[in-house]
Image (cartoon, rainbow, N blue to C red; front, side):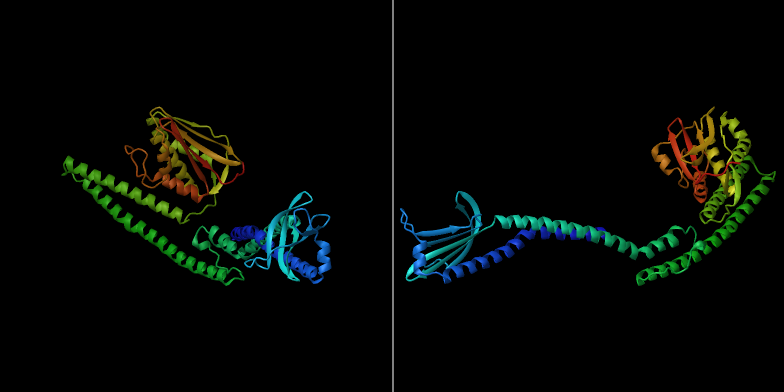
Length: 439
């Protein structure tokens, strides 16, 4: 708003600056015209025949004229006999150049035709415009300086005044929108504001968050109900299929179909559990007050996944040098690390390598999990955290592992960075939100 006001004033100043010469000239010319008329009247009022005869002298070219001028050539007067023209105005004002004692200057000229004792005369009185032009330039320069100063002062005044007026708005944004991660943490305390508009905005935000909190509560209840309503029939079906397998009368074809159905039920159960996990994470349904040691988690993870690591003959290198503590949810962090390492195993090459390292970058503690696998291109990296996205369709899985990892990282305010090169490998880097204490 302040910039808009400043630009509009600047445009107005520019227009006035363009119109200024015209305005100044009109005022100045009116003043000069009045002055010339007074001089003409004074000259004619005191004129008599003897003076005219004294003024006008016969010259060789028979032109009867009289002239006088000031020492600085700022004014001049010429009286001459001239034949009367019926179509000519009695008094006229023009701007023209005159040569006075060898100097060519521009003058504002009054030409007055009059008759005195049956003889026609022309009186010409001129006033120099050189000083007027200098004065016009000075006025323009001075006014521009004044306008620029006014522009700066009003811009600063507008900026501070608008900041003052919008202070309640910024407070609403900061306390009631930016800092709110969940509806239960919303502050319903009314914001003090002199403007009725901001008070209305605050009131509408409170009402909106009340409705969101109610929907949020219903969503949590829905998720809890879904976990029972969906998982319970799956468990019943699985139990029935397992009982059928105990029937010795089944042939091999029936056994294969039942076994396939059990695998499908297991996959469906995993998908539901993963989706429920993502939903609970996004709804902040986990506590974050547990002491977490990443070194211990990596060591335990290596032991748990040793069979899978050996199956692909992967060289697992744990080069972590620091043992740092971090406040969070231990179960979720364990799932986060597990998903990243199993991904590194799944998409690695035979006899490949996985390197887990840690360190500091710009005062932030990080953990890197790098593999020598198939890698990803830019388009795959962009979609790698999307749900149901798989890098390689030949691999097993539902494409939810990295989506869960991303949700857990966001829940703990951990940033995940991905770098990858096709056929060379991928590295996932966990950037912790702050430096934590060394134990």
